[in-house]
Image (tube, rainbow, N blue to C red):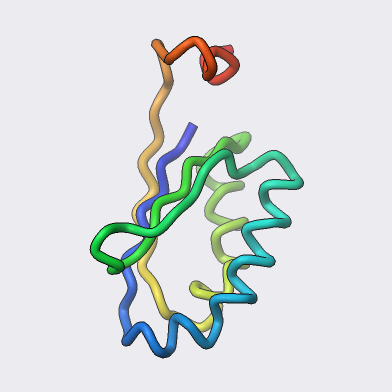
Length: 95
């Protein structure tokens, strides 16, 4: 399991230029079962993604396809963790 913290490196006007492409990228990763949750940081300085992948290298390859990465608009901080306890609705994360 991974938490991915995105930090924007440019003005929001540049982010907004690629936002639709980024959302399409997110949709593909949700469909593939890689991303479980995502959203904006508050204040809007980046985003957060909860992901699962076979390993960090696989996830880093997937993140490299994000338009924000392709156009060098954001930095990515990847935190790997092993869930050991969850709310009942999220029990599947501990399997």
